[in-house]
Image: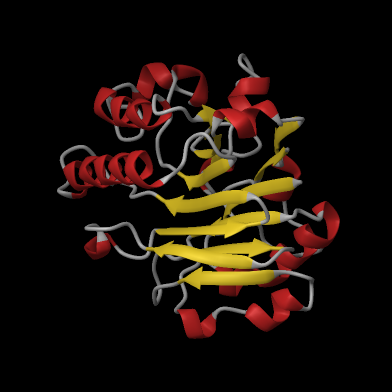
Length: 256
């Protein structure tokens, strides 16, 4: 089974790009983030024509998450409990034999902004939810755009950005609180020393200079990690395809 996570950065603008990727990579289950559209705008019919069942937790112009799967989907939870004011940022489903959650974690803007402590509270709520609601002895995945660089290797400029947003001790501690529940970073499990990134700013030629961050993750329980065959960052789909403009994030994939 090939699973993936991707911050699509506006599905309305990138539906044809997404379809191009689906046809080329043929993933079985995909978590999408940052749809920037309401539920009634979600292109379910177009994705069904590509062989995918879908569920969406959208929001007009902002946020939004979705799951695409080649097998039937059972919705477990839409929205992170007690964090609804931060928008449509989580959806949890069961598909096949996998408990699958995708999240679009708050950005935080900068450490002096009110969104920064709110981001930390959101992560605390996520950690509590996952600890209380997910069976960690079963095959389960939590994926998405976490907007945190967990380790120095995950940033192109750790020295310059240390203590700034995505690079603070507090963000890394709350991420570690989630991981310590029994989740494994599937990409890092196979590539412990590989300084690859999943996001690059559109500006300043950052992609071609490889000035990026690794902030998109597939986290798996121990049983999911035990089935892991491959994990990769699909950097090729951060490039323009047939005049179609890419997201500023690359997909992250794992085969289990």
